[in-house]
Image 1: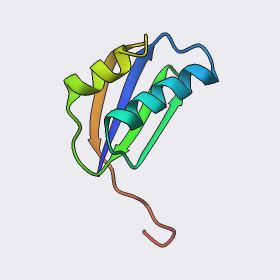
Image 2: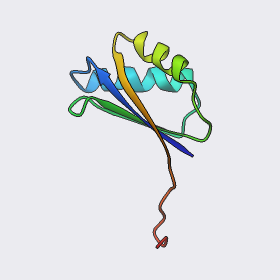
Image 3: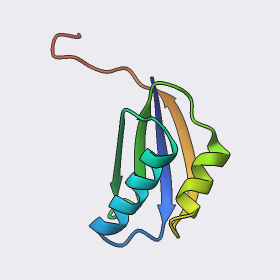
Image 4: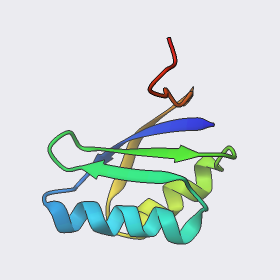
Length: 82
């Protein structure tokens, strides 16, 4: 699984977060997407690697701008994983 952290410019409220989350969900099949206007970031968990250009285009279409994108492997940590 892959974790993407996007720094996004322009999110000012909870509704902004919802717009970005909805745009990502419409463009891609993702496991989870959460945004924080306070941190200015969106975190996406996906089974498959996402196309960076298409992701930037989906967010840009909402009126917000992706400043940076960081990819990393994500391993779900269960209750009994040590």
